[in-house]
Image (cartoon, rainbow, N blue to C red; front, top):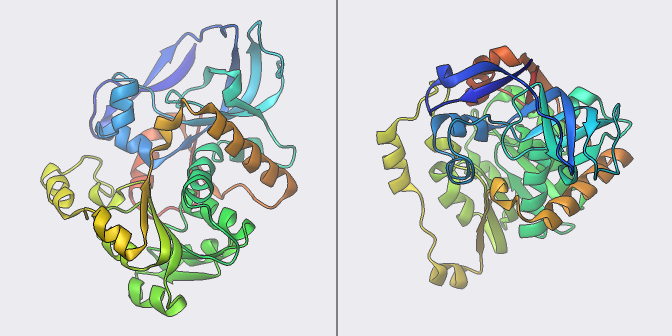
Length: 344
C-alpha cells in the first residue's frame, strides 16, 4: 500500500489527512513514479483553505495537493518510448503530488539532469515555470533592464533572480527579514531591500530612480499600487499571487480581512494605463495545463540552464509526508527561504 495526503474538505492544518491507497498501473501514455520528494508551494495551502480557484473548477474535493515530484520510474505504459524502469525523473502534476507513488502522462515527465540531486529536483518545476512564464512569456525581459522581485528569497523569487540575471537583466530582490538577504544575493540579486529594516519604496527609488522595467509581485493589495507607481515607462507589473490577503501561521482565512483586503486591492484603469504607458499582467500557472506547447518550451529551457550550470536548484528544507501540517505552517509563516519538500 502507498501513502498520500487527502483534503476531504477545506479547513485548517487538521484538514490534511494521511491515507493509504493501492497504486494503479500506468495507462498507455503514462509513467509510474516512485516518489522521492514532493515540492510544497504556497498554492497548496490556498487549496487547503478552499480558496484556490483552479482546484475548485478543475478538480473539486476531496483532493490531494501537489504540483511537482521527483523520483524513479517503476513502470511505463505501452505507448511510452522515452522512459524505462529505473530512470530518475522529475514530473509536473496538476494536483496529486503529495503521495508516495503516482502515474503521470509522459509529456509531464522529464529526465533528471545528471548534475542535479534527486531530492532537490522536486523543488524545480513549479517555481521555475512560474518565474519563466512571468519573465519570458509575459514581460519579455531584456538585457540591461531593472527587475524588482518581491518575495525575493522564496522559491519563485530565487528562480526569477537567476532567470533575470541569465537574460542580462539587473535583478533587485525584496525580502521581509534580514536572514534572507544573503540567500537572495547568492542567487543573483545585484541589490537586496530588507523591508524589515528600511523603507521598501525609498530604497527601491534610490536603487533605480527611473523605475523598473519589470516588477514581479505576489503580495496583493499591500504592494500592488506602489509597484505600479514604480514602473519605468513601458514597464510591466506581473501579478501571480495575493499573499498579504492570506493568514500567516494561523492556517485558516479571516473572511472579514479577506473582504477588507479585496476592497483595498487596486483596480487598474485601462485609460490610465494607456496614459501612463505601463502594463499590468497576471496569470495562474495551474490554468495553463492545456498549453502544453508553452510548458514544454519553458521546461526545455529551464532544464538546459540547469544542465549547463547557468541555473541551479534552490536551497531546501524537508519534512516527512506525515508532518505535512508542520510544513504548511512553516511555509505560511513567511520565515522560510527557497523550497520546502515532503519526503514519503
